Image (cartoon, rainbow, N blue to C red; front, side, top):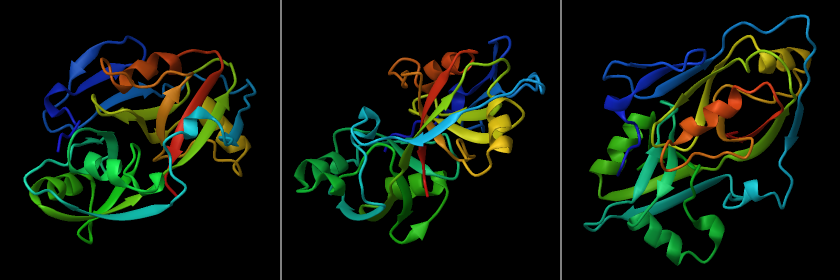
Length: 242
């Protein structure tokens, strides 16, 4: 198991200055503060919220199954999983490499029975836990029964406008998503107040793409942050667990 938590490389990024400063070693993730309350309350905002339509490349690789239970026997091999630990409450599959899980995926008859990037590992051997607990069980146990929950993809279009998005985001340096930790005053908050029946963005969502930009192998999810700082139209692709 290769956790992508990067404890000793954690940093804080200022949305205004871009300056980096070390976090304590116990901090498990990086934070991006785009939540400064500088949105003009007299400006009207709007946002289009829609579930991604079939055929959208965004849906490729996602499964129609809501949950999945699988048994694995390591037999001296590694699982080959890397976890995105941007959300301390959820162990989310960040990537799949050579190992037991990849062998399983190569042998399934139905694609929906494969483990997929973005899956949330709910429990191991019947025991639920937060991300660190799940990671430890996956590492220490040789016989595993793993329960997974599949995310639902959404697309949100935030139109051009002044001010910040008002999102407090967390990410793992080697993960592939931005975790929505809180929503404060800003463009998103305004939309949620005006249209409470359409929760375009929710706390606990995982943002996997901003304006067509995904996490890359060099900078990880940090590459998406610059796109969030623009005052132009912003398209977000989100995974949500229901």
